[in-house]
Amino acid sequence: MSSPLHQFEVKSIIPIEIDGIDLSFTNASLFMVLSVLCGFGIMWFLMRRQLLIPSTAQSVGEALFGFVRTTAKDCIGAGYERYLPFILTVFLMVFFGNFLGLFPYAFTYTSQLAPVGTFAVLGLIVSICIGLANHGVRWFRTFLPEGIPLIMAPVVIPIEIFSFLAKPFSLTVRLVMNMIVGHILLKIIAGFVYSLGLAGGLPLLVVGVLILFEVFIAFLQAYIYTILTSIYIGEAVHSH
Image (cartoon, rainbow, N blue to C red; front, side):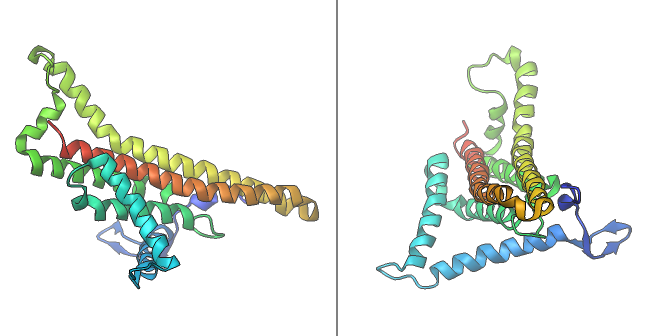
């Protein structure tokens, strides 16, 4: 049985190098493109016919959109509509990154620090831009909350800045570690099924249950990632 860690290896599909910089199109790049196509394609398919009495497909699409919209509204409040496209994009990218990785020979780019960290840093930059756009330079008062004596500023401000910059790290590590652990467990038990042959009925059943559980985790992690991103945006919008 091959190492369960081989599934996380980034492999070059189309080698591209410019001035010594590796810009190759990799398996991670491929599945990010597939996630974009899946997200766009499925939403288009579900909402292609918008009827007064919705069809089953339209109902599913509206339920998905409504779920993300409710999350954004609860976390951001007034004016959430402006940020809904970004939040929906984050949800779909994370979910399909998790979900597509469950298929045999697929690659889970949400198990890699670089793409997930990029999503998180992008969310941080967006929240900073939103804070500055809504409050101007007063947004920097976020790092010195009201009621804190100025004499405490040298201590409080570095702590607040560190806490703010740690948000992308917490988002990234939470998602990456969940994906890695789940896929390693699936790989190990699937290896038992292959090794045991006909006697692997019980491990096969366990694999089936784990796959269903991983689908739930794929959705749950996308939801957690989305709700935390929405909370960070909401803090920027309503910062005082």
